[in-house]
Image 1 (cartoon, rainbow over the protein chains, first blue to last red):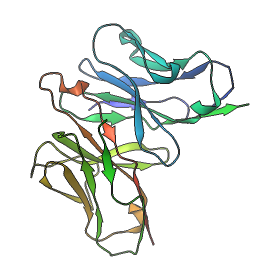
Image 2: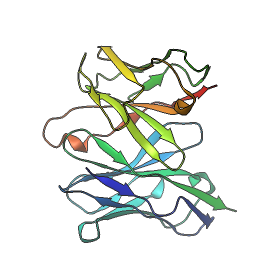
Image 3: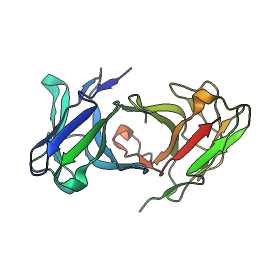
Length: 112
Length: 117
């Protein structure tokens, strides 16, 4: 079975500061990797995904993530945080059988 | 845009009641999923379905059943609700594209928050 670890259940940054949300996975096969965002009282929305090819993936709202196979990581970054980025972020991994495994989530707080 | 609609956003039920959570998607997706979301635990898969009348257990199926009589509709059933089933329930769907289908994206509904008293 695959697993996903998100370090830090809560992360707080100042507006304009770098956002770094960490995700590590364990997988016996090359994985597909995803970041989803959840705003209060809403479902999850896809931010970005890695399937094959370029290991640096750009997503919506200025977010990007880099797949590092040697580190089994897929950390999410944004150069400059905005107040509207405050939400909960979930890292997920998928195998070839349509099953998705989610991390426990990281709540991002952005301070003015 | 694909839309996944969960019929009830908020429900309050009593212990022992039978509860139905309905989910409808409008883009002809083969796969549909029910997840449970609890603080600090992320999303846990309850059941999924890859075709009409087909279902497979996820990681936490105990206390739940599902029904998929039509391709667009996937229902989650709590036969006898208990307080430990108080949670946020998320429905999702995805398209099957054959090899590498793990690259498919899940599209989520807005969630159904169930409170069992």
